[in-house]
Structures are given as structure tokens and as C-alpha cells.
Amino acid sequence: MTRADYTAIARWVPQQARVLDLGCGDGELLKFLRNERNASGYGIEIAPDNILASVRNGVNVIQKDLETGLSGFGANSFDCVILSQTLQAMHHTELMMKEMLRVGREAIVTFPNFGYWRHRLQILLGHMPVSSDLPYQWFNTPNIHLCTLTDFEGLCKTLHVHILERLVLEDGRAIDALPNLRGSLAIYRIKAA
Image 1 (cartoon, rainbow, N blue to C red):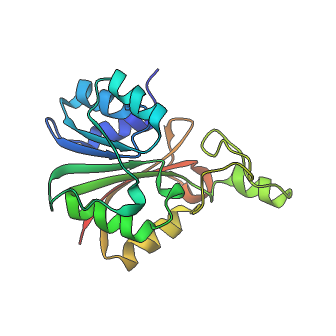
Image 2 (tube, helix red, strand yellow):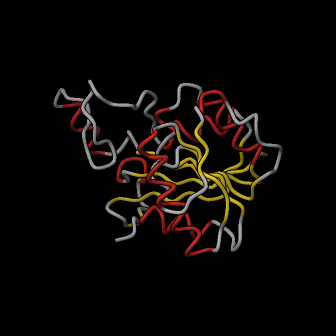
């Protein structure tokens, strides 16, 4: 079954686009975009097991630590740069946002919404949130910068990043009313202002 965020991302990726997927994991998203949008491009991943899985999925993958930036890529090398559920694991969030918009004409960023009501309730009950979008316990999480929709939009404003579109999901359904409270996953399409 296809993840709802993959379908949403694919709607924003032009046909035959050149795509760079940062923190591509097993390469499933790029494989999906190749099949659905005839997209080509590269994935960047650091974990050896994920690199092997990406290769098995027929994805061109480069082993690289994203924290060092994207200096190997020229400006506007890609139609779209994707950072899918990796933003919260980045130490240098601002640098990554700037680099994405330097090498790509547009970018798509997805992240778990820390402002989601179920996450807030868990904190109110004295626990760090655990959910399908935040599946780790506090002591083993790779997530270091959790944010809400409001936080991310504030960062975009600070960095002079233009938000082209926003989609907020809960269980694969789009949330329009009170998205920062009711949505568990945020998807943004952005470009440099």
C-alpha cells in the first residue's frame, strides 16, 4: 500500500523532473516517483543498510552525511529537492533549508507535527509523544528538532522562504480545520523568495 505522503508529494513533482531525495532511506519514494512521474535523480543516504536497499530498488544513491551540506551539487541542479521526514533529525536545519533551495528550483519538506493533539496529550500526561509519525522512545530517538506547523512557517519567514502549498494529514486524510492541532504529518512545497 502506498503511503499517503508519497501520493501527495508526487502531485507536486512535475513529470520527468530531476529529483534529489535527501535522507532517502530505502529509496521507496524515488522508486515511486520514477513509476508515477517518470522522475529521475539521486538519493542521499548515510546508513549502509538503506544504501543497499536503495540500490535494490533501482535508485541511484550517494552515501553522504547531510549535515555537511550539498556542496557537490551546483545551483538549480534539480527541479525538486525532497526532505521527507528527515528535517527533525537535522542538527543544522537552517543550513539544510538554504542548501535545498540552492540546488533545487523547489523543495518539498515533510515532518511529523509536534503540535498534533495526541502528542500534546501525551506530554500533558507526563510522557514524550510516541505515535506512528514519532515511533521512537525519548531515549532512542534520532529526532532532535521537533516542531509544529507554526514553528516551521516561522522558520520559512525568517529564511525568506516562500510557501507555495501546504498539506496536513492525519491517517492519510487532509486536514483543513485547525491543522496545527488536528494534523499529525505536515507536507510543504517551498521555494526561495
